[in-house]
Image (cartoon, rainbow, N blue to C red; front, top):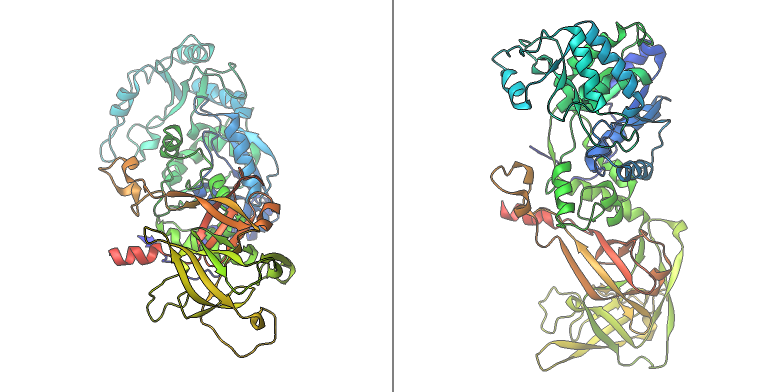
Length: 574
């Protein structure tokens, strides 16, 4: 199902099921009323907006209950991990407005986890399996058929210990052996059918180097890390719901080891919520990495990407993203959220914070024929009518202006309230003008539009009672700057690219997701503003200043249009 179709953004007041559960735990005095969460990303890529939902839950829950949230990197697979991703994750969390109490790594607990694995082997609860991954998978059975015991399941304890140490010494090749927990090959939950808890990876770790060759699996490392850190509520997405019994099983086994248990009466509580899925988007890290590596986008922070750094570069505010996540809420069922709701949240937020400026993306010369050639006036422009504290800036008015080509029509229909011969319009912050005609080139294209102004109609003068139906934006040709404008659109041309089972996701990319316009003009004022400033190009849309922009080469990214045009297109197609 698809949730919401561009509804008005409103405050969410009711508590979700996780908030209710946490409040109930506090009332019952569990963990001494303490609330501690953690955000545990794997540093194998850049965070996307789906991670933002988890961030808001983990950090937000701790904030609301005067608790703490730690950042813990799940760095148990050195092949895919890098410090570049660690740095980007930290930057994204802080940009969203959150701050962790402590930074931990799963690698901090490698020795602790190793000791726990050794304890399981000594108790006869883990064994070394030399079968291939394919053989192990085949013997696990199906949800309706029990698994088959490994031929190595009853290997002697001393032999298991010796081989486990060889796995870490470098004597064993990758894939040749794994350590499996000995639980129950007939269990109804297939995760209990002797899960793999250690494998050999001969690749330098970004923190521990070559110190380890045997690495713990996620299911073995995650719950134990929560326990060591004192996490009270381990919040994760729904795909981990079936892992929860195994999570609890390993913690119970850990608590039974006297030298490793820190507190026998304490156990973290895992709860699951739905993931964030968006229309016209993919959230798979593998697919996002493919887009980057195959140069189908311009790196992880390409404004078309659903990454947090991509949204930041495109001009989304952290407040808008948090507002959107608050709107869609947390449930126990998966849903596909309409990206129009995210864009509506962005529009609402930027309307309150974006500086209004004029820009002309498809320019045609407008000449005010009765305006003095050597005269220039300073006009006041309000930075943001929604914010009285935002102030004003000045814009110059002169005889020769730039206007949008679409704002002129020589033979216009009756309800065309823009520039057309014989009709009056107001030039915003300036005068009422009357169109007198145009000039065309040999190809029949309009190259100049002519008008006359009424000096008694300057903005701010006493109202003469004269009304016009159209107000147009403009720029003084001699007092503006050239600019490059990048018009970003949705990355995929189909609503749910993840559901297209028989198609290569690359073939579903929207060929019009980026249009670069190089012959634009903007106010000089924009050259004074810092990168990533939030702007509204009046009558066009919301934009921001790209990080690569310089005073000598201004570059702007379209964040979102003033109105939702995709919903209209989608509804028409349906």
